[in-house]
Amino acid sequence: MNWYLKVLKNYAVFSGRARRKEYWMFVLFNMIFSIVAIVLDNILGTAIEDVGYGLFYFLYAFAVLIPGLAVSVRRLHDVGKSGWMILICLIPIVGGIWLLVLMVTDSNPGNNQYGPNPKDSDSIDSAANDTQLSLATSDSLPGDILILIVVIWMFVAKLIWTVLPIVMNDIYSTELIKIINGVLGIIWAFVPIALAFAVKNKSMQVALFIIGGIYLLYGLFGAVSQLIR
Image 1 (cartoon, rainbow, N blue to C red):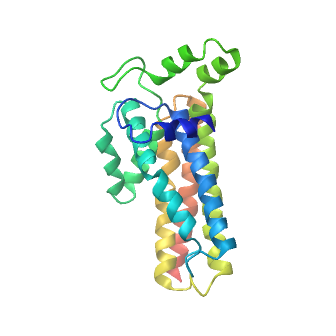
Image 2 (cartoon, rainbow, N blue to C red):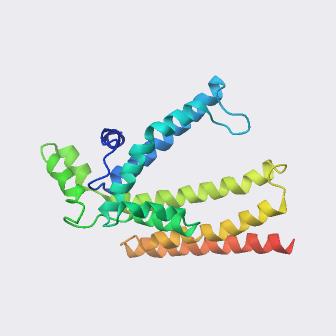
Image 3 (tube, rainbow, N blue to C red):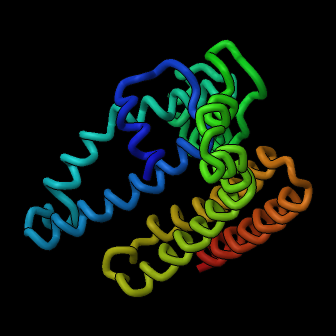
């Protein structure tokens, strides 16, 4: 929670650097609070019909728009990239995957053109507190477990989008939607493969390549099956 609050305190600070832990902890709590806002919209009747969210979600999204952009820019600075690289997400599919890889890439060691390594400053600031020191100097969560969390999230998301057409056939019954879903399934497979290049651990790299291959075979099977039908 402290990392989330830190991002809010640096509301419109686009200079400097943000380590992976700061960025991804903000993303985690941002997702939680977004879900809470959606639940409130549905409980209080402020959700837009056929959309599922409304007033509270839009208010929250507007409130965190600037700090979200700011921490994203600082995260790009941390890997030695210009903040304008965030616009790469406008490139369909490939841009989003590339940006994700940059966001999970480890910090540039030492100083770079955007400032000192935030992990070094975090370690200095927390030297008086042993518990905080151990948390600040251990970046294994973003480096290893975080990658695993992203891949698990991909699996869950893929599972949801596999089940939805079955339980909501009236919405997902058109052939075009099914073809698009099959093609996206193939593209989805390249995310863990791309993430493998951001990981230094060889075992993790091999695991990600294997997972990407499994996703790719599954996506190809679904797409080919749909085309045959």
